Length: 296
Image 1 (cartoon, rainbow, N blue to C red):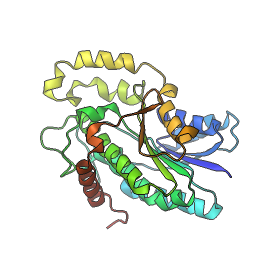
Image 2: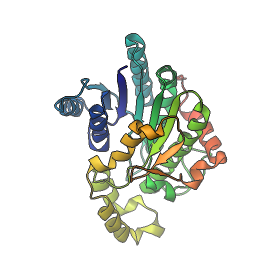
Image 3: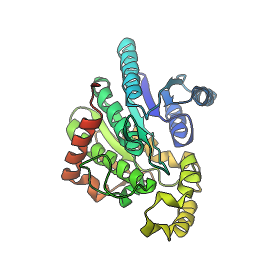
Image 4: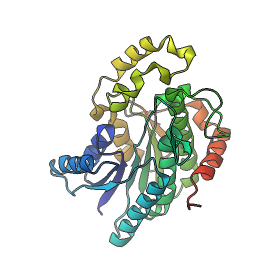
C-alpha cells in the first residue's frame, strides 16, 4: 500500500531534508509552508531525485490556528477521497523570536512551537488512526532544559526572553507528545519526539545571535555559550534530520511509542519535567483553552 507523509515547515532546512529522506524511503511526501515559491522549489528538488511518488506542496501559515484548521481539513479530505492512508505526520515547524510577538492575541512562540502542532495533530487523529499503523513525529529541542515549568497561562511571569520562551513552548509540546503516546497506546498510532541537536539554520544564524534572547543571568555568559553552540551547530541540516527520519521509518521502532529519538538518531531518556503528569495535565488544559478543536 502507498505510504504517505506530511512534513510541516518542509520547504527548507531540516524540514526539507526530512522530506527528501522520506521520499527516498518510498513515501509520497506533502510539504507544508508559508511561501509558494519556496514550496515549488522544495517540490522540484524532491522530484528531481526520482522518487517513487511525486511530492506536493500545501500552503499554510502555521502561526495562524485558523490556517492550521483549514490545512487539517484539506489533508483529511484528500485522504478520505483517495482512500490512501496517512502514514506519517512530522511536526517540524518551529520558531524563536527576539522580541515578544503575538499571533491571534496569543504569544507567538507558544503558538508556533506548541499550539500549532498540537492542533494539527489532534485534528488529524481520525485520519492517522484510519491509516494505522502510522506515526506522529514531533520535533523537540535541547532548549527544554532552560524552560520555566509553569503552565497556568500561556505567558510565564517575568520578562520576555526568546530562547527561554522557545524552550518552554518546546517543553509543553514534549509533555504533550509523551501524554499523547499514552492516550493512543493500542490504536496503532505511534508517537515520537525527535531532537535534531545542532544544525546551522536560519534560526541559529539569525535570532540566536541576539544576546537579548536570554535572561540577564545568562547574558554575560552568552558569548561563550554562543561559541559552544556554534561549534555544535556547524553540521548540515541533513544530519539534523536523521532523528526525525529514524522516528518516522526505523523498523525497530514498530509497535513502540512514547520514545524520544536523540541527536544521534537513537532513543534517549526524555527530559524529566516532560514526563511529569502534572506538567502534562497543565499543558492539556492550556492547549484546549487556546486551541479548541472547533473554532469559537
